[in-house]
Length: 181
Image (cartoon, rainbow, N blue to C red):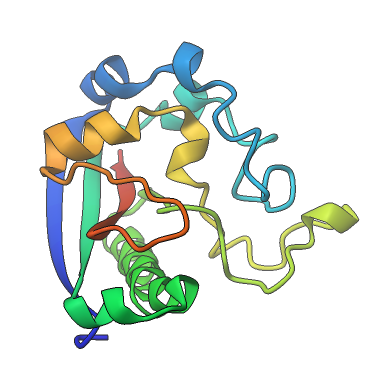
């Protein structure tokens, strides 16, 4: 992975009340997940994600976790953009989730929010109407909670998000969080 990218991490602690007041924008992001190909197909994504204020209730602090994956010149020469992303950004997201799950064990009552959809299973059981087979590992996607992630990443972590279609951007950012009582 080191030939294809470098990584930088950032962590920021906020009070949950201040976080929700600044970044929870249900009116702006209510429909943002509807166009995603995984909408209704994985347990970590809408519809069916808990109501944001209810999910965050009972937690006092949120640790915002960011990993910026910056692509090297070699990565930009690859023709298969998805393969580069899987080997770099995908790996960073999985490592972030593993770190979050380990942190949950250190902070009794803590709960993680994942960077993107759950990717534990090759085929989620949700479309077949079955429950999640890995509920102890499944974490809801940060995007599903109608949070202004672009503003959050820029203002709190110093990682402005970049959007790119069909080509590799300069970098990707994985955003996760740890809620603590």
